[in-house]
Length: 173
Image 1: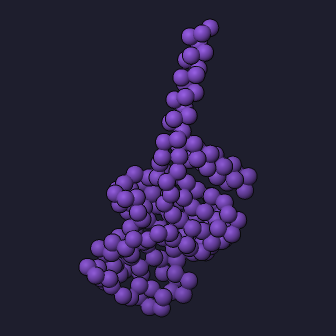
Image 2: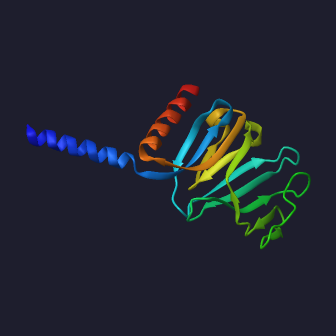
Image 3: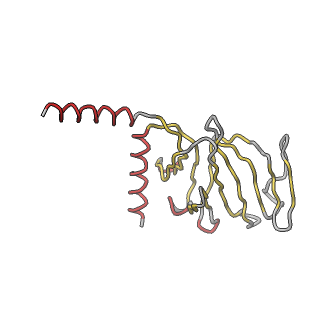
């Protein structure tokens, strides 16, 4: 009986220590309701893209991001089908503009982005693509403002947030 109690105590202590281990995550929040709607763990070097339909030009805009060694969100490249009203037109230091047959591209951007706030709407086709998995952003919280940012949290908080956002999505359906 004593061995079993010692084992359970050691297991509980190990679970507690593991739960306090810090991880970096991409977190998507719905600021108006102060709730997290999506969370995904990150590693340095991870890449993802964000697509939206421009509200005036109605063309698709793709932003390509990477996570650097300091777990910062870096905008590397933007691809867009038109270069008129409200679309990128100014280059930063070291950036390159290329115009193709179907799209224009600004590459080598290296812009540090603290957070992304984006209005999502079904008609804008807002999509987050991570490892060939496409996530339609309006499916997370409807037509609303979303904030994407990187956070450092514990494994306990990650598990809790994932369960909470899962149940929220399940209840919405």
